[in-house]
Length: 136
Image 1 (cartoon, rainbow, N blue to C red):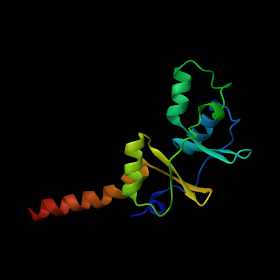
Image 2 (image 1 turned 90 degrees about the horizontal axis):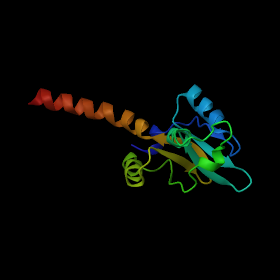
Image 3 (image 1 turned 90 degrees about the vertical axis):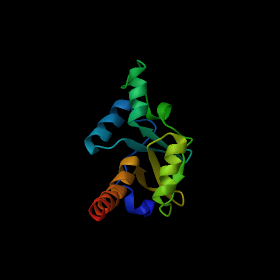
Image 4 (image 1 turned 135 degrees about the vertical axis):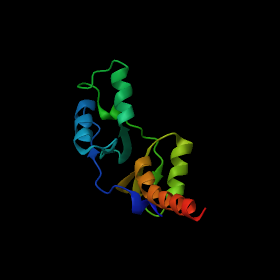
């Protein structure tokens, strides 16, 4: 199965000037754990995750003052729609993160998360487990 089969294509995109509170509200409404941060001045693509916001607030920073720019991960590993889910999962494990921005050329076209991958794998594995139990 490929990343394009699992990724979310409705991507929350914010700018670097969004405050952490604004980002958190947008993420909460959409029930998602990450936003793509696009900086049109530098064609920078980064990611702001719920963990980034949690670390900032837990560190005593003001979410109404702190901006996405200051907490965005810009050293991002990108996936393509043609990656296998195994490739994506491996990149996540090796990088220690739970989301990958999916690019088609230079354009973000989706995000794939650990949860997305599990949703794809779980039905097949549950079915295989049930068939093994019945055969035994």
